Image (cartoon, rainbow, N blue to C red; front, side, top):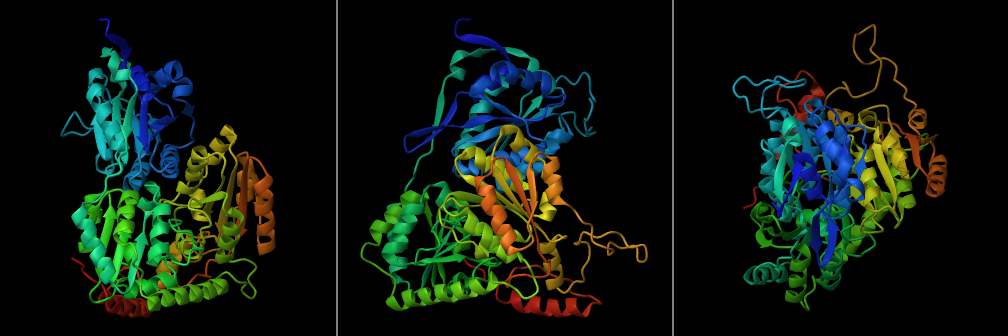
Length: 622
């Protein structure tokens, strides 16, 4: 037929992905910027062959070193591109597929787009059970790829080649929808990838998915403006949605004109740069003393692009004003109604513009502006003490953060995700640019950092990118150093070595528990426990073995020199900084982590008593 072309399913998939675009504000971007893949049976002779034959520059292939890492790279790329584009990730049947599950959950929790294309068992079932097939006696139509269902925003299995005609457009719709996006999984049975079909030519025409900027309802804006004008101590909590909608300028305009102070979640860091007089920094469990003090007394909280996780709300103890009200600006209707908020459902930039007009001429009371200024000054003094030298200690984690912050400046982006760093970095980091702070803290996934830094670098090759992680996270997933070397990308990786899962060790001991299972120690022959001498790891040597440069820095001066050298160096530069695990920053809020109600350990019993007192501060907002 003249209006069709005969292709195998895998080739049709490649050609379709090459023609998908996403647009916002009149600017088009590729929706699928390439394919990361590790090949095995299940995708090498189908999709892999199609990529080699039909991919080219229109759909380039990248070779990761682990399946989980390639999804992290795609997620970080999507985050850095403000959801305007991502990558596809393909794997073999079985363990290659399930290795992507953690990455899929990371994407969906953070509402960032990624397309997953795992190989699957034979649709015709003739050779089953195939190598790596998990047999499910209750059904012949279940494979390990069904595990992706709860962590995907859209899931499908292609059992006939013509099914991509309906599956792929729906997959692209979800990937490009800022309210619904996340991991999209299209499971591909091995035999179906190779089957041919006469596809209509118009299926391969260019498609552009336009991201609209919906405004909030006028009546809701009027109600919100009335609440704000009637408040005495309002507070804005800015989340990642401010970045995703490119609303940082609109937020700055509102804060400047009204004087409403701004606190930020992990994803919202940089939504208002720290030098702005209205910026109070991080809020919640990992918040600053300034932001948390103002939040406790706020009579109105204006939430912008945040899903109000337990870290942001301090497990619902952060906002203690007896008559506190909430307004929420969000594209997602569920998030816009949390805490009984007055919902302003719409694009953050569009809604902030509406609020700016509705609040023309209004400012917060002068006494409140003075209180905000004093809170900022008090936090500045506290922060200086926290990052200052400690007697007898050559280098602390707080000092490492401060030095990386200075090195990053306005031209760099720091990537972090897990362990003790996110809490301390959120607290201490001063954003000098809106895009200098990249946090994966929705899932707080160990191993994200180096793979994520790779994705950020691919999204913006001109920026200096810093992967910032602990020794535990490095040991989990450092192999994308090889991918960065392979692609000729410049990265600076700073590893904080405290010979432990130090964050959880601190939580364990802070809850009254004895040290158990969190230090990197040899097993003691005397006790049979992991409490012998420390296990020393030479991270700098490990980095050199992977093709990077590696350097040890154990004092502030050595670290400063290493960071300065990395700025002018090419390739991947790994800097390892040793710090003591026991030197920790104070907290300025509470987190709901229950400890045992009955214990023989006195410290646990005391911690439980404190926990029960803290529970009484939890609020139910509706």
